[in-house]
Image 1 (cartoon, rainbow, N blue to C red):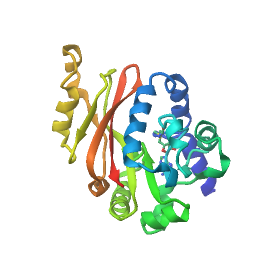
Image 2: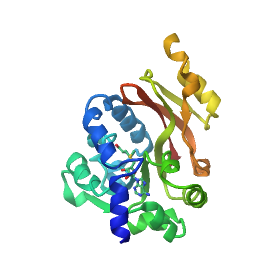
Image 3: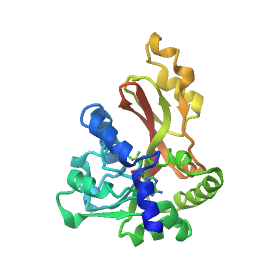
Length: 251
Ligand SMILES: C[S@@+](CC[C@H](N)C(=O)[O-])C[C@H]1O[C@@H](n2cnc3c(N)ncnc32)[C@H](O)[C@@H]1O
């Protein structure tokens, strides 16, 4: 019953699943292209030797924000997602070479918890050595209740505070307009006000009225395990919705 329950949650959930695949069908090829390219450049800085890296990618969905040309350079990729549709889509987008790509359908939070929140043990168990959290750590608050979020928060802080190299890109802010593109970098993590001011500095007057409607995503204590730099990229999710994506980690 657990597998079936996980499969259904994988197909229908607030962070991915069928709704996200449909949005990707509409927007991924054109509207998401600039973000995909900028993200690939930023990830190349953080993973400078992909040819000798075995990467675990967590929550990639169909990999719509992952640039195939960059991801094909990794020696091996193990993709972990609870969405049963993700594997086949990812395989066709990222991996012509089946020997170097494996998809594992798994609720990684449950399995990491079973490993005592030891990121190294979990990663090695999958045959990887570094982890990319692929836009899900800013969405956990939509998926889990308060009590479970407390457990997850403490667990992830432990997991990401260890020695295993990791990078995460995740939502920090959302706003209901098509905001102009930005790429911002800070040596240490900016507070919300400082970041919002930097993000909106170049918005024109017509967009300024909406500054007060910026939503901030719940990011857990795990982020304290990241070292600088902290990079911020805008992702035009829909015509009238923009995410400010935070990229950080420890590699
Ligand atoms: C917003 S999507 C990621 C988008 C993706 N990075 C892209 O390139 O388009 C978030 C993904 O995280 C997955 N996910 C959420 N919680 C998970 C968990 N506990 N274990 C595994 N996958 C999870 C969802 O199934 C979904 O596919």
